[in-house]
Image 1 (cartoon, rainbow, N blue to C red):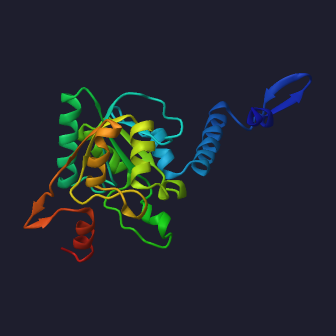
Image 2 (image 1 turned 180 degrees about the vertical axis):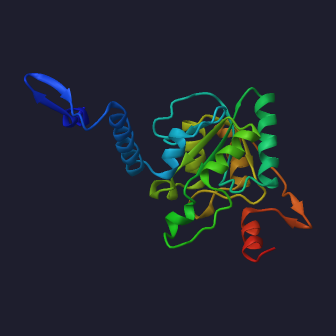
Image 3 (image 1 turned 90 degrees about the vertical axis):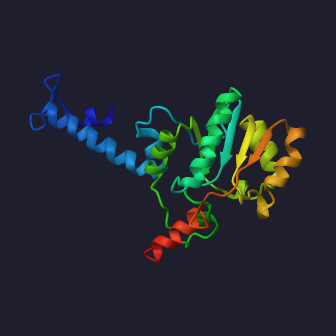
Length: 231
């Protein structure tokens, strides 16, 4: 350990700890250096994934190394705010997972894909990542795949996403999708595509209706707009 060597001095063939640095000081110095290095190496998402004491929600950051063949009931989206619309999806997801002996899961992104598509876009998130994970854990979800949106993901068509990611990689057996959700290159993936592929790829799919409040469909975008206007 380089720090230990640095703080040890040789005198009369004996290793002596420098008198200026007591054992307690040595410990604090080591912890300070470790903490500084940790903050430099890891992103916010990695730091929370590594350190946050979540007991019942498994967080998977790297799909490349994911090898589990546990069958999943899954939904996809940002789930920013984990609002009433999201909770209707989550409740249905948990219900289906229990009934069909699957594990519930969400495939989401951090940071928001809009930051990749337009780095200057100042996306106002309703939750921090830590808040989002806490809310998802409380909702009963068992797994979250927290993907970084990148060029490879961006270029997947809806069909490729279903086959390569949802079925071959994640072993999804039941998909719950929101009323207006799209995915894949040029928004080529939607409920109709999932329905057309379900028999061939061996999964079931349900689309849920919008949850309304005061005759308005609840969505993260509308909540952001309302907050920005002070409503």
